[in-house]
Length: 338
Ligand code: KG4
Ligand code: ZN
Image (cartoon, rainbow, N blue to C red; front, side, top):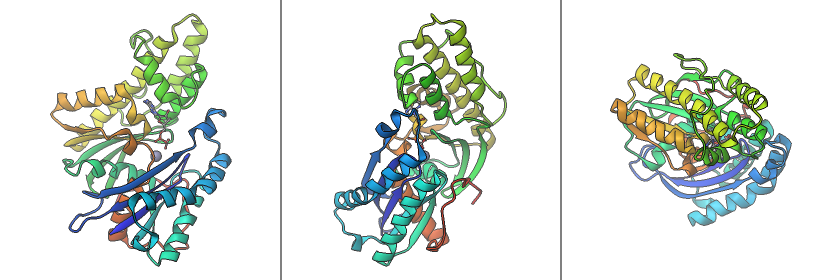
């Protein structure tokens, strides 16, 4: 079976073709035949963040060539596709509508099922595309520009949300602090780089909500602003390193609590912030210290991509059947049980 996946929930226009080999049970052990991502980062950089209307228009412009590229790279025509999956939530309403409308049209033309996919579930499933042998249960830390979630995965497709952020997402905190420090957008990669030359112990920034499975980053952001205003001569690299350490400390301590609460066999990272070198280092150290396995997916599977959407579409098609063509998008979709 070949599934075409489409992702347009935020600022990446992506399409992928994923193959479910005979005997494989999605999302485990699938083969990525192609995965094309057209990022709009440069378009939004001058605004310091994603502008929804700009994102929707760019998706409209790019969706057809990106899908065509994904099919060409996979070496197949639309006539070989057995199902079309698209992210139907959560995300920006106008952006989601572009991918979902394209997917429904392609499914109609090809005479195959359409499957609406939960973007958060897809992030949780991404690891299986690279590593089919993840020991269950998983404790997944999903950290991106839009989300911060701790999820227990007891079996493929079965999720329990254990905690999340009460204010900003982790990536949003990186982006806002980088913007305040004049470092540009997106902020995560630049803070990650700069932090390597700074002292993570230079400033004792707060670690919010200790002992709980929830996170908070807005107080930390305010603490950075107040510190820099009070100490204008402070080295930016020290602020970046100390801020990053405070974020990573908070995330890793929550992941440790989640792992204990679920008896997790494997720790998994997902989302754009999972590319953070310090977070990867500290997560690996936590796994080693607690005798757990760890899986740190390559950045291309952590950030938004359509291979994870196609893989989750394959799973949902088997478990729930096709999604009706009159189903809409849900910008505020959560990750419920089941
Ligand atoms: O998953 P993603 O590509 O897009 C969504 O938000 O859905 O995540 C983007 C976020 C941005 O906030 C970016 O600053 C952050 O991931 N990010 C990082 C790093 N690379 C990307 N944050 C910290 N360290 C990084 N190396
Ligand atoms: Zn995402």
